[in-house]
Image (cartoon, rainbow over all chains, first blue to last red; front, side, top):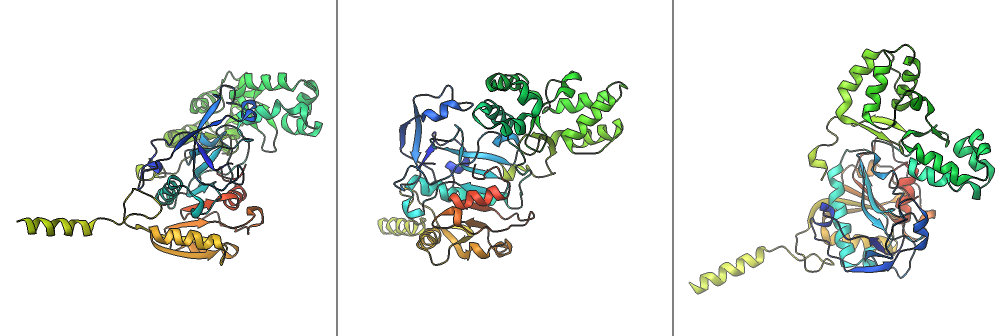
Length: 288
Length: 124
């Protein structure tokens, strides 16, 4: 990452309190490389940025992957970083649970006034998250980035293709990675990872008439299917796959859903599963 | 009457918070937090951070990233994990999963710490 944050400061409290972050905005050219990534197609010619530090270098700071960042309620991107070779939306400063990553590398003597104010605000802000450990750990790539990588399979060695999509699809689509990526994109709501790095289109859910693997309604549909003899086994398998639980009877699943419905979220990054937010974790006092 | 107004004005001015160094045009008192900066003891970078933090926070302590295991954070409100030089060569603290102290990870070293912990904030 360069010395700059990308985009104007938002209305988030981390730009307002205790210090107002008042940067000097500049326009920098949009890195061509970013147009190749998902979300990069419609970038303008120039991007609004502001200097957080003056290191004298256009590298040396670090960003985090932006894709999938928002799929758990414990995480947020506080500012995107201007990082030429990285995907658009990569996080320059971000938080997950009680951890806040300040991606800029310079010490305070090299920070701009706006950078100093933002840094101090970050320290004050993270204090709100005392005891709020991260809800998930990174287990997988999110599906958007996975499909992007599938589109690049032709440029990589054959083992990469097998690892990403399995030997059958790798063989069937050899030399046609764009078509393969289009297939995955068409079924993006049914993509999941097997936990070993392979991405699968969930034919089982598709056969059950379910359109998405990441909506809470999907769990309702699957629990209802438990009562249908011809679909019960597949529904139970899918429920266990997407929750990591080993409940069996429809009553057990109904009780679990009723108890946790309001606190469920689905995370690709966390392993293509539903998770339950612990009681009290999302107290208003801890979140903006 | 004028004298009273003068003394009232003077008294009120003495109660105004001091300007915060480095954050021009914004006034505040020291922030009421205790901060533990954990980095490379004796380095110029550590000195820079400690000077800055001392100017803005009620209590500032320092520690060694190579020795940090989370237990040193017990008495601090916020922990900063940092290192000088090549962040890829920085020590790798092993924090238990139970670690829940508010923590700012900084720069390359911080991004790598976050990566090793499987955090979304980790270096991509």
